Length: 233
Image (cartoon, rainbow, N blue to C red; front, side, top):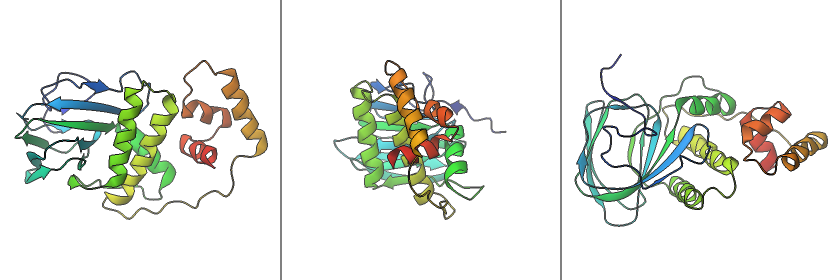
């Protein structure tokens, strides 16, 4: 067991950063994922471990000179606007941001990650690879969508943010893990008519509530990921 500090980005203060977020998904009701946005001064952190898997996305403005240490390996990088980084949970990490800057952090709780792995891929053990300087348009656009949803106070409800998070996790597993991911065969067709009617009836009966995908999945006795796929179809 490591003696390094454990950092949960949903709780403040902590040694990873010295400022509170200026924008947060605290009120979203999302399960397993969160979004924070910062305007942050130059800062050097001690070594620590995140309790969540973290994606960072640099905001608009100037490149930020930074140094990152993963399990003793040092990387220096000028983070360009829109570039990303990926820091898996439970690895030793420290950073030195030489300049003030704007950035967003998206965090996934490991149980949320594991649930999607179990439902969407056929490999039991996956090693997530730390990344610096990601020029990934998909991650950047998902970050923009998260930020817009938080700024608008979640007009589409909890389901929108959780769906974005699921797509982003599958993208990370496909592109930034040590194993080749083999998705299971896709289901053909959508929900049977009688189950679709159950969903419609449930939504109509709870229009004044913030319904989650997991609640709809409970109505159908399906997993959240399968429910999401069927509803999209």
